[in-house]
Length: 159
Image (cartoon, rainbow, N blue to C red; front, side, top):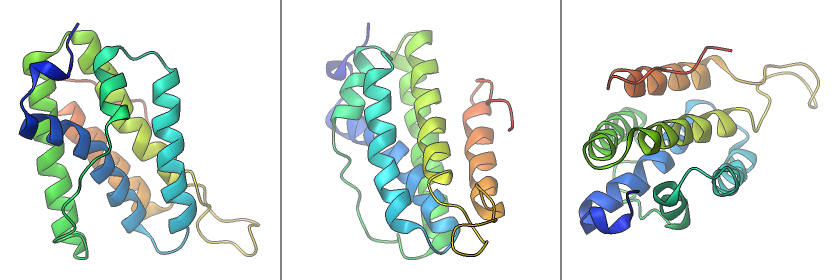
């Protein structure tokens, strides 16, 4: 079992920051629903705590991410930063954790994005109609799945 002690402070920060940046990418993909989507991030972390993903995932979801706000207003900057941090985090987990912990982290990151994307219906009128996940949000989810899958892991089945 891998624990927090296996990572230095900078590496740990990367592991904790990556899921939060994925959530921010999904939130920034479309206008509207920001409050619901932000609250759903907390729900995704709570669900991960209950899912029994192991000690490493428990420590990650128990750590509050410290995200440098610089560059978050620019969507392209956010996308590039989130992708780079996610790739680095996956590399760290793959190099130091068990295959089960790598899979749990991968599922957690994808689950965070999915939970945030489903938190607010896009389009429609007064909550009627619209899409559960907008095209922009789906594009982010697909990109994250591709990034996770590009590291030798299998992305989740598309919905």
